[in-house]
Length: 116
Image (cartoon, rainbow, N blue to C red; front, side, top):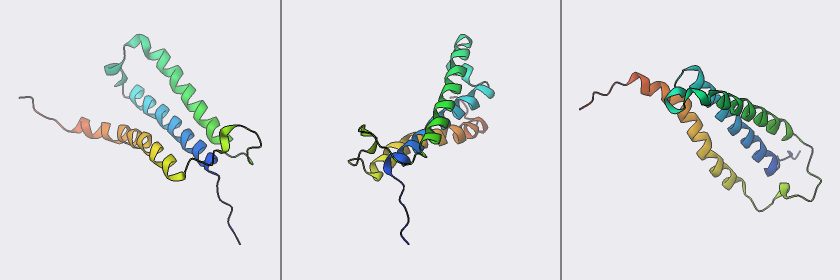
Protein backbone atom coordinates (compact mmCIF):
# COMPACT_ATOMS: atom_id res chain seq x y z
CA UNK A 1 0.00 0.00 0.00
CA UNK A 2 1.40 3.37 -1.01
CA UNK A 3 1.86 5.93 1.75
CA UNK A 4 0.54 9.42 1.26
CA UNK A 5 3.35 11.97 1.15
CA UNK A 6 3.13 15.24 3.00
CA UNK A 7 3.04 18.18 0.56
CA UNK A 8 6.02 20.51 0.67
CA UNK A 9 3.89 23.57 1.47
CA UNK A 10 2.44 21.76 4.49
CA UNK A 11 5.91 20.87 5.75
CA UNK A 12 7.01 24.47 5.18
CA UNK A 13 4.05 25.77 7.20
CA UNK A 14 4.87 23.41 10.05
CA UNK A 15 8.51 24.50 10.10
CA UNK A 16 7.53 28.16 10.11
CA UNK A 17 5.13 27.54 12.99
CA UNK A 18 7.81 25.76 15.00
CA UNK A 19 10.27 28.60 14.36
CA UNK A 20 7.77 31.27 15.46
CA UNK A 21 6.91 29.37 18.64
CA UNK A 22 10.63 28.81 19.28
CA UNK A 23 11.38 32.54 19.02
CA UNK A 24 8.57 33.30 21.45
CA UNK A 25 9.96 30.72 23.89
CA UNK A 26 13.42 32.32 23.67
CA UNK A 27 11.88 35.70 24.50
CA UNK A 28 9.99 34.08 27.39
CA UNK A 29 13.17 32.51 28.76
CA UNK A 30 15.03 35.81 28.61
CA UNK A 31 12.11 37.58 30.29
CA UNK A 32 11.79 35.06 33.13
CA UNK A 33 15.54 34.98 33.80
CA UNK A 34 15.61 38.83 33.80
CA UNK A 35 18.40 38.78 31.20
CA UNK A 36 16.25 40.72 28.78
CA UNK A 37 17.12 43.84 30.77
CA UNK A 38 20.69 43.51 29.51
CA UNK A 39 19.42 43.91 25.95
CA UNK A 40 16.40 46.21 26.34
CA UNK A 41 15.34 49.15 28.43
CA UNK A 42 12.59 48.47 30.99
CA UNK A 43 10.20 50.73 29.05
CA UNK A 44 10.31 48.31 26.11
CA UNK A 45 9.21 45.25 28.12
CA UNK A 46 5.45 45.64 27.40
CA UNK A 47 6.14 45.74 23.66
CA UNK A 48 8.34 42.68 23.97
CA UNK A 49 5.61 40.79 25.84
CA UNK A 50 3.11 41.76 23.15
CA UNK A 51 5.51 40.50 20.47
CA UNK A 52 6.07 37.26 22.40
CA UNK A 53 2.35 36.54 22.69
CA UNK A 54 1.76 37.53 19.06
CA UNK A 55 4.53 35.27 17.76
CA UNK A 56 3.21 32.37 19.81
CA UNK A 57 -0.35 32.83 18.52
CA UNK A 58 0.78 33.21 14.90
CA UNK A 59 2.99 30.12 15.22
CA UNK A 60 0.14 28.14 16.78
CA UNK A 61 -2.24 29.02 13.95
CA UNK A 62 0.50 28.30 11.42
CA UNK A 63 0.77 24.78 12.83
CA UNK A 64 -3.01 24.48 12.99
CA UNK A 65 -3.51 25.58 9.37
CA UNK A 66 -0.80 23.31 8.02
CA UNK A 67 -3.26 20.44 8.42
CA UNK A 68 -5.47 21.58 5.52
CA UNK A 69 -6.76 19.04 3.04
CA UNK A 70 -5.03 20.63 0.08
CA UNK A 71 -4.84 24.07 -1.41
CA UNK A 72 -7.47 24.64 -4.03
CA UNK A 73 -6.59 28.14 -5.09
CA UNK A 74 -4.51 29.87 -7.72
CA UNK A 75 -2.09 31.32 -5.21
CA UNK A 76 1.56 30.35 -4.96
CA UNK A 77 1.10 28.11 -1.93
CA UNK A 78 1.73 24.93 -3.87
CA UNK A 79 4.99 26.08 -5.40
CA UNK A 80 6.54 22.98 -6.96
CA UNK A 81 9.84 24.75 -7.65
CA UNK A 82 10.98 24.78 -4.01
CA UNK A 83 12.62 21.56 -2.98
CA UNK A 84 12.52 19.94 0.42
CA UNK A 85 16.30 20.24 0.82
CA UNK A 86 16.24 24.01 0.30
CA UNK A 87 13.39 24.45 2.78
CA UNK A 88 15.23 22.40 5.40
CA UNK A 89 18.48 24.31 4.85
CA UNK A 90 16.76 27.69 5.19
CA UNK A 91 14.91 26.64 8.32
CA UNK A 92 17.90 24.94 9.93
CA UNK A 93 19.66 28.28 10.38
CA UNK A 94 16.75 29.61 12.45
CA UNK A 95 16.29 26.37 14.38
CA UNK A 96 20.03 26.22 15.13
CA UNK A 97 19.97 29.75 16.58
CA UNK A 98 16.88 28.97 18.68
CA UNK A 99 18.45 25.79 20.09
CA UNK A 100 21.70 27.61 20.84
CA UNK A 101 19.92 30.45 22.62
CA UNK A 102 17.89 28.02 24.74
CA UNK A 103 20.83 25.78 25.68
CA UNK A 104 23.99 27.87 25.54
CA UNK A 105 22.75 30.62 27.84
CA UNK A 106 22.92 28.33 30.87
CA UNK A 107 26.38 27.09 29.93
CA UNK A 108 27.75 30.62 29.63
CA UNK A 109 26.51 31.46 33.14
CA UNK A 110 28.50 28.60 34.68
CA UNK A 111 31.81 29.52 33.02
CA UNK A 112 33.84 32.21 34.77
CA UNK A 113 36.53 33.74 32.59
CA UNK A 114 38.95 35.98 34.49
CA UNK A 115 39.58 39.38 32.99
CA UNK A 116 43.14 40.25 32.00
